[in-house]
Image 1: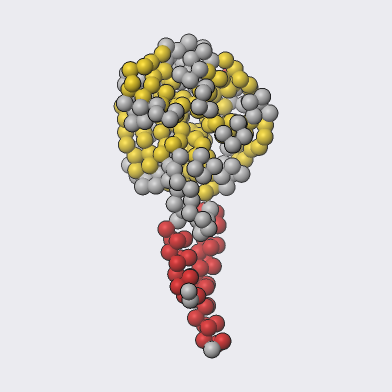
Image 2: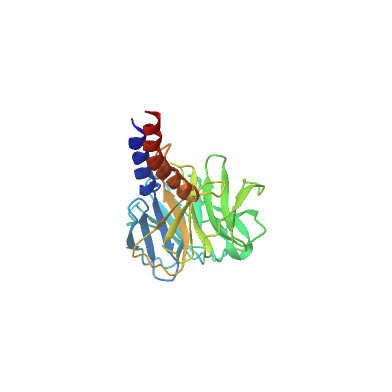
Length: 271
């Protein structure tokens, strides 16, 4: 392969940008029963009306079903993966106000309780909930990380995301300044990374667990109002080794252009 061919291949890959595929379920919590199914690979979405559920926020995704709880803790409903109702629903306890996001470890469901700075552990259908631990800050997003049996949690008082074990010990944290109120956190098992957006935002951000932004996908036509809950069905891993984080994109682009321009000159001088 010549220098020119290699440079052209590298340049084409960089211009295409990172290829990050995931399906994100994003819940609109403003009394209208709307959930968006987002395809980050194509940048498109589908809208689902899940009425009579009106305030979906906390989401738990299982192999064949999805359970969503209303954020006022006044009920939860079960759906298939296309958000068709299965007919199962459960009354809430009206105990945990502001259940703004949810997740599952495959057995139990979990949610943040924003008003009490608590992470709550529930049965798989968001019933029989109790405090698992307190974060010490208003918690506004949560997702489960199976690699170390822990939880990633968004701090509403700062642009930070924190990793806690089940006992409430903090393991790691990073800052993510996305230009809004960070929320809607989900874990992507295919890439061992996180997806997050901002409240009412149309851009889905893929973030490494050290805070590095991997990709940002703006969904054309998506104009949500008050989104809080989100979870992810894993996509495909990024193609190694030429997929580069967006913060290194321009440096790598300049390198490719330099190789493309200078390589023929060097070859002529050598010959």
